[in-house]
Length: 83
Image 1 (cartoon, rainbow, N blue to C red):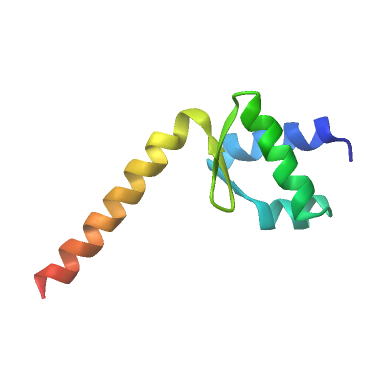
Image 2 (image 1 turned 45 degrees about the vertical axis):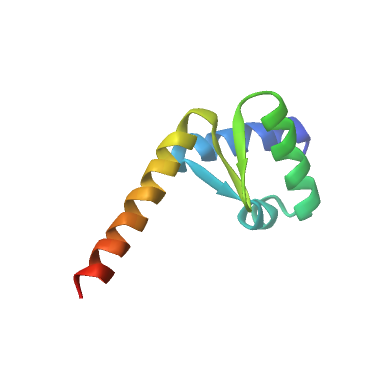
């Protein structure tokens, strides 16, 4: 598969799910993790995505992902502190 085809499919997955993981893309595209990392870096340099540990998110959904993470952490603390 050509790099441009992978880029398109990666962006489609991001639009559908909001996040992609290197390990899942590696299996799906039957390629190395390094190839996927390079693809994600190219998309990052083009301004489409933000890299996160182990994968990527759409550039405009990064704040949503961070807010969601903060909400989950708050909920965990709230339950833990209730005891």
